[in-house]
Length: 425
Image (cartoon, rainbow, N blue to C red; front, top):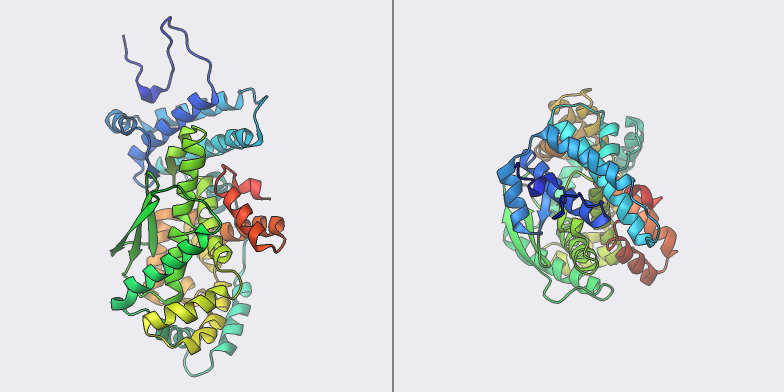
């Protein structure tokens, strides 16, 4: 008799009958399929803290891509056919979440198998969202404002870099500044979000990565937060990374999903995080907008001026000038999407993409080339940062109506739920 192993996901009763699928059985199959997909795509599984034997079986079985995709499609059909009567709103969100996550898995495996999508097709299928198109003229207007804000000689890029490089955190002060930023972000978060006892993180400084920072969630309420030191860290980068990767960003997001959905509700699908899925837009968008939630309005600049600037040995009197320029350059964020869209659609090559970024984001060539490597590896994932922040911010502010306490409540509810990007409307 041919063994029906865990990765084939059939539940066989003693009498030989196949049990009717349930949301829980489908969720377990989804986790095992995600692990099977991760065997073919080393970037697919960002975090897993479910039964270790499931991962062992997936790695040993090495199911073919075609077999995984067939099972993904069959599982989506089973899920679509479930009776949703009696489900509460969270249960209905769970159902829609699993449908979209399975669809994204099929799309990612299609890419791994060599299929081609346009940038917008890919982001829609993977991340449940499409970024708006901004023509070059949109960014030219912002560059003109920056040109007026940065008088002097040389090109705008040269003046911008000369200005910005005055605000680098010295390497020997980076750890102290980053830990101070983390401590402040954590303190503000804990005033509004109850986290389980024992939640913790470890900081590591790394090199040779295409990203600036990364949170590797380990399960059991613990994260490894890595900071890439290949490029200089600017003074706003310390708090940006601390809040994004830590509090109230990725670390808090993953802790709450594990606590509220995996443990309290028993939803096994939240023991795994497939990177190329709609979950990532919520994760990145909330991590970015969480900075504004924790440090609203001018609070961020005031904290950096009063605490981080002195720790870094920088002149606090220059914080306001730094932030005037920073707030203008932040408006150039969608230029990264346009570079990725043009590059992945085959309209420009890697060198031209780096040149676009140098022109329209004012990045120095080395950092622009690093970002092109990021695009090459993570593709349309780039929309999750700026579009995700915008969508999450609009969702929260529409419900908070300017109330700071309500903002935290809505934010916490969002990152404790299986809400999808399309559900942020």
